[in-house]
Image (cartoon, rainbow, N blue to C red; front, side, top):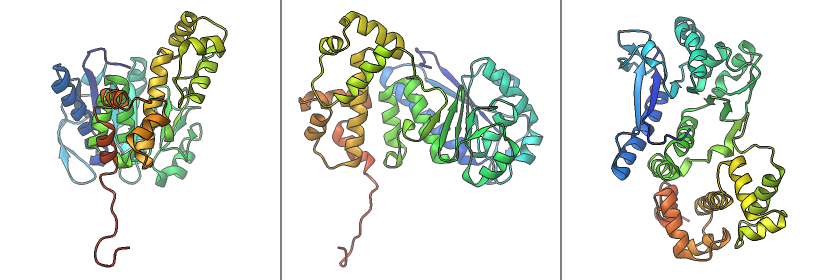
Length: 339
């Protein structure tokens, strides 16, 4: 889903009784990412966001806030992403009033649009038949009703995010933020994603894959040699790794390993190893008191200067600044009786 320099067109559905934050939070995140790309890469805005509605009058949200549409449903065609916000209380009355959205979804998916439904907004793709036999989630308060109304959907009560093909469901407002960060990493790269993450409550961020159910993990493939290579790299994450040694372990040439690895995973073995190391480093910085040097050593990079440069290049932050940002809102007891 990488953007390749093309502007990504995001449309947010606007319908009555929608929760404002399930619209405005992802829109703010997308706008921040677009601003970062414009400032750092000197490109035109990377993301456009428009509000689409079936009504030409202001739409009253659950909070009483009124918003006016930018475009009609017909003009929403051929968008890259459609955001379906959460609804306050029982979503069924609005679902009945907004059948036009339900009828539009299969056509959008057929055109390659990614659907992101927040909370009870997942009722829209469920009603459209897009989730038959597929995984989905919704707001926890609506689990039982969702299961009764859509028995053909595999409801995942223990997952905050699900992916079934092009349809993502996020069970809460915080989860849609996690999902946006994940998608931005695909579209605009990990550097932009990490900068945006650092601005939007990074201390509560959890990696997408830590709490998402994906019906088809993008890393799934059937090349046993590459699977063995991935496992070997994971097992040796903390060591100095030489790809010729890995190729020898797998009884193939380095050229063959590189070719098959890129074909199966979309990255070279070195790029894959780098991403695993940076992911492990972020987790150690987030959850431990290890020094930056100790973190670097734990992920197989003995040169602290190189580790710091690599981390900054791919996250937009130094390891120290990243740690400060993810721990920036930890509170402790204060006052004369503290401790």
